[in-house]
Length: 142
Image 1 (cartoon, rainbow, N blue to C red):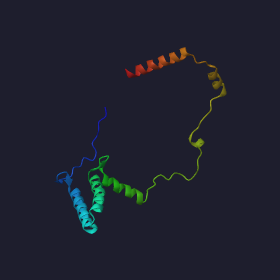
Image 2 (tube, rainbow, N blue to C red):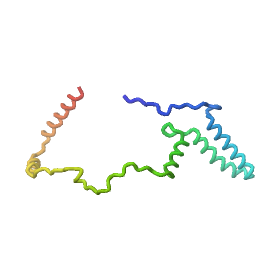
Image 3 (cartoon, rainbow, N blue to C red):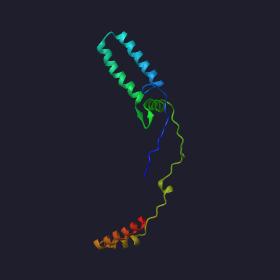
């Protein structure tokens, strides 16, 4: 039986409702940006369209998690991977090697191949093989 092992069991102090201090700062920042846009745009329809885009993205960035990690942390990891240098730990050898150096395959003598091809497979022989296999598997279960 497999059990789920909890990962990242850190709990952060809640400031107000479900919001942590970082979430609270983000909410204040988004509210400030929307307030500044309200005075700069002087057009309610455009401001609503921008707010409809910004507010859900903010809420998703505050509450969504991927594998128990906040989505903001995943975004940081994504941009680090995208823009920072990559480490290549395994360089391997510069000499090209063929598969024959790694695997030593010996072919079967022709005599054995001919003997096998002369055997006829019948339904009775297959049933016997299946019964033998069943007995072996039953013995392993006990």
